[in-house]
Length: 137
Image (cartoon, rainbow, N blue to C red):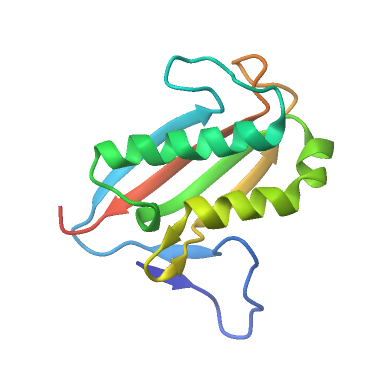
């Protein structure tokens, strides 16, 4: 994959402006994953553990397709608790760096964060969806 950064632009922190997937890659679309476990039970109502579990869920679905964190091209995060997000932003970054670590370093896809009034699955606070390009499959 190749990260897109127009000439003269300051590099973004914690995401990429765009990514080009390699030719011939298999595309995996991962539905919105919330912070519940494999039995669809929320183990916490707090944003930080829900974010970690949601990201683990995205990576688990991706692994079924033979993908790894560095294959994620795009991720959209929906969060219904902006004050909690801002309060734990540094800790969320630490979770991201731990789970998205690759042999080449930490991977940051093209990302959007959207604040919404609520999520379908209560007491969900965050939902992550992703698109990945799995090369050589």
